[in-house]
Image (cartoon, rainbow, N blue to C red):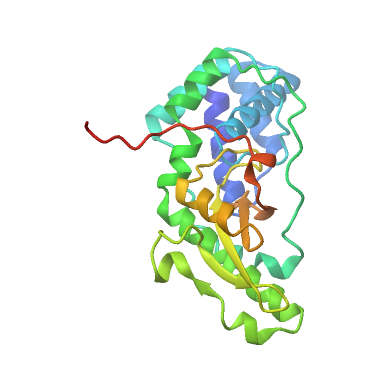
Amino acid sequence: MDAIVADYFAMLSEDLARRPYVKSRHSAALMDEIGRTHRSVEFKHQNISAVLEELGMPWIPGYKPKRNYQAAIFGAIDRYLTGRGIPTYEQLPPTVLNVAEEGDVFIAPPPAPDFASTQPAPLVSLLRKFDPVERDYRNRALGAAGEEFIMGVERKRLIGIDRPDLARKIRWIAAEDGDGAGYDVLSFEPDGKERLIEVKTTNGSARTPFFLTRNEHEVADSRPDAWHLYRVHLFAQSPRVFTIKPPLDQALSLRAETWRATPI
């Protein structure tokens, strides 16, 4: 299992760096090393993809996630990540911010998952140890890169509808004024009305959860016609965005996880 997990992460590193590699050669080398069949190796690679998707991490597109897990996979991934740490993907290829030139980055919000909601206990333990929500929240470089990406997307959108005047007025509120506004980017509708964009970015899939602050929620409630949530996902690979409008409780499952505590 340790050999399979290490080999998977080696291929994932090549994939994220846009360097060519041949999966069949990796599989053949593994089969020689560990004496397993190609089907067995392939299945375990798909197990790893499923676990990484749950952890809010990139996974190899050629290995579609399979969630009928073999229990030993959790320990092997835990050992790998504990020994090496969660790989960082802040140093994104320069082309990532130009992805909007390749086509529309906006997609529909993800549907409800088509697999059982009950997670195996070892996976729950992994999620607590390598919490994707907390990791994304503290990854300032990732957050800033996602906001910069959306600035570019919005400029292209407005220029594309013949409003370059509005494109020039877009402001990066989070960088210029700080995080207290309840949104990150000030953009505009075609008629000039404000579009307040809160950007949430992850290298994981569209299903990766995220933190929403009380201030962001209050601004969404107070300005529902203007406020938009842009969920940027798959950022290190092929960035895509889905959007959500208030009322948020109709589109998101909101659960309180922190409290502001004052001694009494």
